[in-house]
Image 1 (cartoon, rainbow, N blue to C red):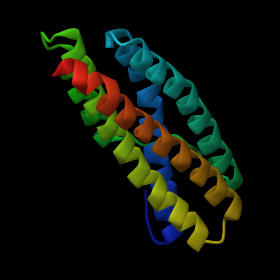
Image 2: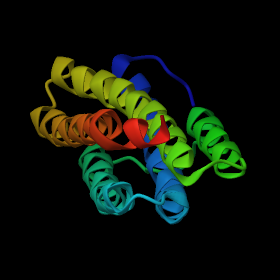
Image 3: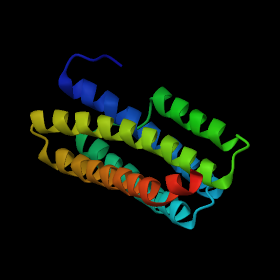
Image 4: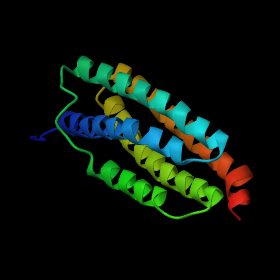
Amino acid sequence: MEMNSLQDLMVDQLKDLYNAEGQLIKALPRMAKAASNPQLQQAFTTHLEQTKGHVERLEQVFESLGQSAKGKTCKAMKGLIEEGKEMMGEDAEPEVMDAGLIAAAQRIEHYEMAGYGCVRTYAQMLGNKEAAKLLQQTLDEEGKTDKLLTDLAEKVINLEAQ
């Protein structure tokens, strides 16, 4: 893809996020299955549903831009998910596995928050208020998930793993 403007960069980054979310939709059920703590299982299941909504929002943004959402593979998400798979393959006590799953999930959340923050800012700068609003909604949800995982880790999971 030729990138000659901030608009081109935004579309490229949106395609990356779209692919990342698609990969995550496939990974979250495996993470929920690998978790032993019911609250963590629920957090992954809830985030799966949110992630499907993130994809729908991205599709709305692409439609408003007259662009296709397809065409890019997010190598970073591929790597983050691969690290999560490695964790799930370890011979770990259930509580330790849960702590490792949270660490893997938070790496993913932080990656997504960075990406959504950038494209939201590009949309604002380009005067695309509707796209900026949709991207901010997703950014807010990613932040809430990250906080939920932190709280779960600090108040339950990490204590059990200790």
